[in-house]
Image 1 (tube, one colour):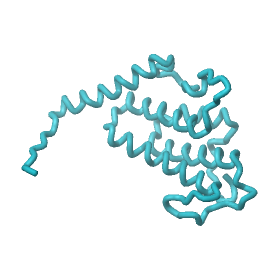
Image 2 (cartoon, helix red, strand yellow):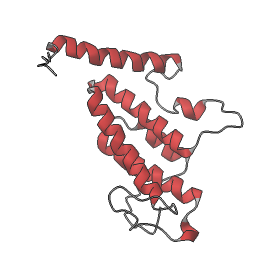
Image 3 (cartoon, rainbow, N blue to C red):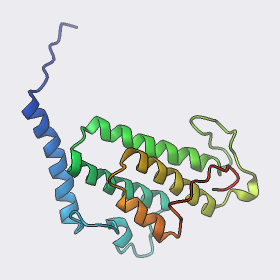
Image 4 (cartoon, one colour):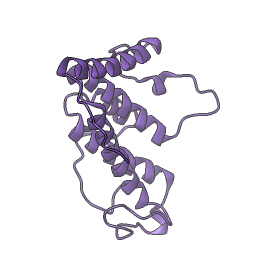
Length: 168
């Protein structure tokens, strides 16, 4: 193992790398017909036939759309985006774990596990949706149009700030 020299990119080239990422996101959204448009996102309008996407897929799709809007707005570096997405995914998992028989949350373990009669798909979906919504609003405060639209489409009140563990 020899000495290895690492070289930082000059500022203009570093910006160019972020611009390439933003360009890829823009190209992808342009090709799907959602170029900088307000919701609904591609997952909400696509004809899925008999194979409807899960609630998790729809939430993550809304997160990606809001993150793409953030890339266009402020061009965050890929490491920032991946951290933001990890925060949202972890919040969703922890909310889901409360309503699962075996899953253990990442922070509080199984201490928030709900009784067996409350472990329904509807409760899991609602808990994950609110956890994701709050995490996305925290991580992307200026670009929440897609997750907000999804919450409204599912009939959830985005102004519900309840922290009561007995409700999803």
